[in-house]
Length: 100
Image (cartoon, rainbow, N blue to C red):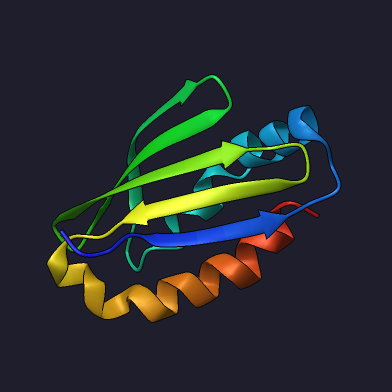
């Protein structure tokens, strides 16, 4: 396993509204990983745990919703680590859009 991608996505929605936006935008979340499809999702308190399959690889992701930010962590397998910078940039750009 490589070092995870970690990004903080600021928002002004409050915790409940941010959770709703994330829940309604699950299809967009899979797109943060090239060719990604969500295969698993579950909430544990304010943390959404996702399993994303991409290019025959499994990516684990966690999104923890706070009052003014969402902390996203994507654990990439070595094969997908080549895309880490692109995934991070897409998360920072499109993740913020998801929360506006």
